[in-house]
Length: 323
Image 1 (cartoon, rainbow, N blue to C red):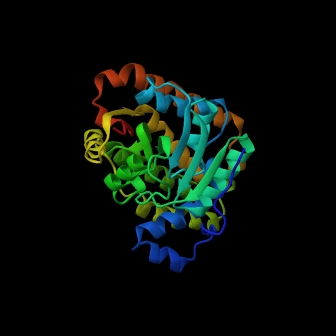
Image 2: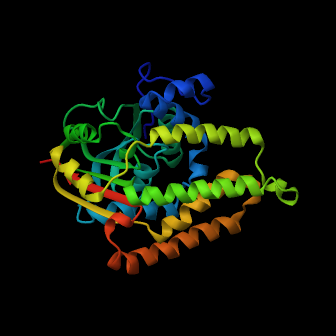
Image 3: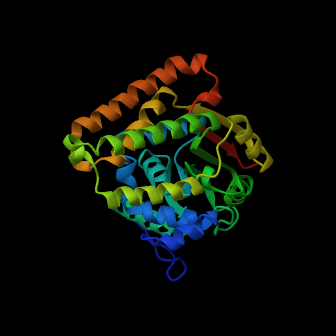
């Protein structure tokens, strides 16, 4: 097992951005990406209910199989682009998709946490701080490249896909999941803003003040939200995402979408969790949120997918192959 970065080449995380840095980041999207994700790295798994057990292994594998179920497994070497804490690749490796992994992210903090998670899981993973538009690996290095909720952070998505194809071996495949559709992003943000406003105002009332996070935590969340508005650059029409992949040089391009009813529960739930003290939400709440999401995902898959156009679902998935 190996879990390491290249000594002396990658910058250290900066988890405490100053107000001046945040102001500068509002004019520099890549600086915003680093500051926001370094800021979030150590708490990101808790914030998004990310785990590395059967629940998230099944979720990650389901996203992969939606567009790549015909693949002979395992791949020898896989890379995750914009790895965050390693959620997608590490869970895919646990499900048998790949033997060896590499995690890359523009945020040093995220690479650090992803490597720590890999080490805790006993997975063979290395890592690099990397700009997705200029990936620091040689041509024809990987058999598989994956990513989850990363393309919408990248200024030049088509250039990033060209880089992905460059580092893939001929016949290698990429799978990117969790990308927001244009319509889905609209209703998700509307529900999140409404939930945040309602929760933070209602918990000002006397009987509910114990449900209110300390004001400094709410202020920090608001500063993070200001950066989040900068780092979320794109939304996608599934057909346009497919066009970009083909323009980058991919073949056998396929897209899928998911989460409509499930997103309408998931976004208010996650926003509410961010607005109240974690001690107020126990195992019962966690099971309500997870089981509710599962039931509504079933509704999306078995019923709504048959009658609702793909562009109305929240998440888009795209896959392609290097010729």
